[in-house]
Length: 397
Image (tube, rainbow, N blue to C red; front, top):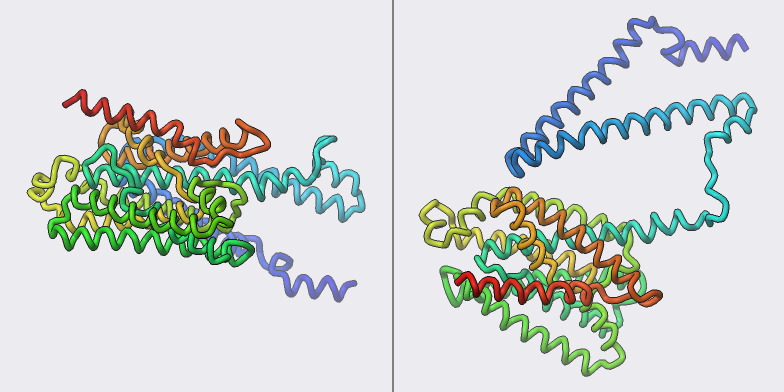
């Protein structure tokens, strides 16, 4: 026994080193980590202030103490509770230790929490991220083309993604583990290739890359690709329903692996657009004014349209074609936050995400146990909104 205690004192510094030295050894790294964390928060505020503005700083200032309190309470309960339980288990007082482990209420199946975490939560997050991505893409697209009815899908993103998905489905590669990876990958590749084709062809037709040329080229390419997809559906009647359901969009059977891909893409693209908020503000005044203020229109359009293609294509590849969100969100947000993109882009992301979650909730609950395609819900809301925007614009003229 004495030999064992001697070994513990020799090997464990807490058993033999002076308290002052131990405080220096363990406290200094903790102080340094806290200072680094403080600098990290300061840098975050600088970026938020430059990108979003004072409203972003105000929001984080309000939210930060709340998050800190939640973390403090959670850490206190977790660290204290685990230490208490460990002590009681070591004393063979299992009943007192089990007091901390609150069982589920009677009548609740233990499977339900797993279903919420593994099925419901990924679905809600995918809906929010998809809505946020489409809303941000629509906001930027309308600014680039100076057209209130412009949509990323006008570039052929949906047509390209739909054709890629149709080819995978007809080839029989949409089922199983391979299909879960192959279908979104091919859809994204076709969507990006379509946008590059549209912009490249528009550049060949018009070196200045005018907005009218981009829109017309996108419409022609979209119609051509949709015709090919419809031909595939007609020639493959066994897969026609599956192709049709994919083109209407769905958030069912979504997994955390898909959230892990879509979340960073949505965040990085949104921050990328905020980086060019000033240039987009200038572009809304017209091409001549933008060029006079030093904005390279041709380069800026290429950069922004490619980023739009990445964001919209990634969302579409995972959930299918969902329209009108990219049209509704920018107009609603601009009514409340004005035209400055450093405010409109974050607000559009939040509104689009919340709107998509509500639409998905309606799709699941309106006709149980059947589920309405999410694209049908957004179209029922978006089509009248589209008509309203069109006629209100004509009245202003």
